[in-house]
Amino acid sequence: MASASRTLSRALRTAAPTFRSTTTRSSRFIAPSQTAFRKQWQRGYATGQEDGPDKYEGNPTGLIWSAGALLVGVGVYGLYTLKPELFGQEPKATIFTPRFEDYQKAYNMIAKRLEEHDNYDDGSYGPVLLRLAWHASGTYDKLTNTGGSNGATMRFAPEGDHGANAGLKAARDFLEPVKAAFPWITYSDLWILGGVCSIQEMQGPKIPYRAGRSDRDLSFCTPDGRLPDASKDRSHIRAIFGRMGFSDKEMVALSGAHALGRCHTDRSGYDGPWTFSPTTFTNDYFKLLLEEKWGYKKWNGPKQFEDVKTKTLMMLPTDMEIVKDKSFRKYTELYASDNEAFFNDFRDAVVTLFELGVPFAQPEDQRWTFRSSFD
Ligand code: HEM
Image 1 (cartoon, rainbow, N blue to C red):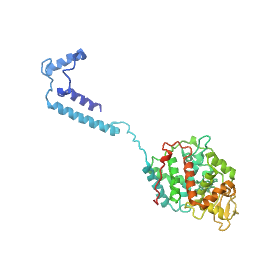
Image 2: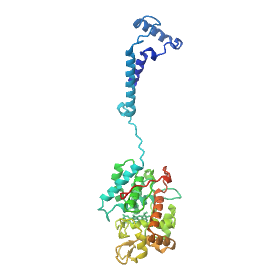
Image 3: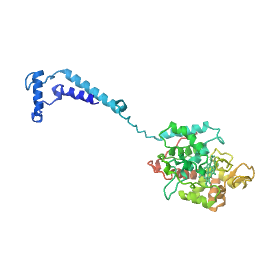
Image 4: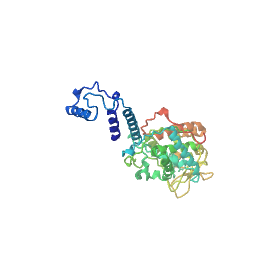
């Protein structure tokens, strides 16, 4: 760079007079020694006249040199700005701002992987991905504004090892190749995208999404005990979901996610699916809760319910509470009879859940809706 600019200024100095202002320059501004040097230089090597014409006056070679040097200078400067590493400088970090279409590509990859890996559990990673998104978000505490999906702190041992999160490594590992293919996405945005994608791909409602969560270090891990305990009653459900700011109606709507997936003895200790179609999002959970006869399962495991007729389905003690409690029950009845009401209320509640405590820059009225593989 420095030599290029020296060449350029030398060429300009020796160029035709049109590039210089010899007539207007006052000798008052030239130091005496310089003046003497100039005179000597003019005498010895140029015209020999003190105020004679410049050596290169009217000589087109000077012009050509200066134009060439200018071009070289511009070229070198351009190269320097584009590829600073060629000049021994740090390469410039290019700021990539992902847009809707970039997230849609990540969504598509999750959807494709769901389809490809259909040998897991009941044929889909969808339920466990949704559980990951819910457990990432469900640690939120509105009083202290701590926890929630911002941070993806379940990556770290204290939180990842909480009993409630047993088995969620399967979901986190499933998403790793997506993170590798789209390194710009944060884990916390990716886990929620996984939940959104799973709901949509399992034929649930469209779930509007906002990006902007950041990954935080392990000091942001939440204490154990913020997620619900399935052995408890209605007061526990209200305490846990109330801490996040949810109403009775929203608690019931969110419970409808148990239409999906199953319990695993090696994770929670409970066993079995809630519905006959655990990889399709429906209101069957509410219908079965109301329509089937449920009795205690006779086994060595924790207290849980099974359907008397087939003994293949299960309900947790907390699931039974949304039928037994009067306020909860009216919403259970509503959702059992009206799938559309369930889809709408679930969508609204789960969007709230996924966004708890996240300081988004993307405004609420500009959420994105991803195309599913059925669209
Ligand atoms: C009182 C509230 C809740 C309790 C006590 C509860 C408890 C449980 C338990 C014990 C399991 C079985 C885990 C295993 O053994 O693998 C489970 C699975 C699941 N839960 Fe919940 N849950 C609650 C609320 C929710 C909510 C709000 C959602 C989502 C919005 C949700 C989504 C799921 C899903 C999709 C599964 C299936 C996971 C799989 O198949 O691997 N749950 N839940």
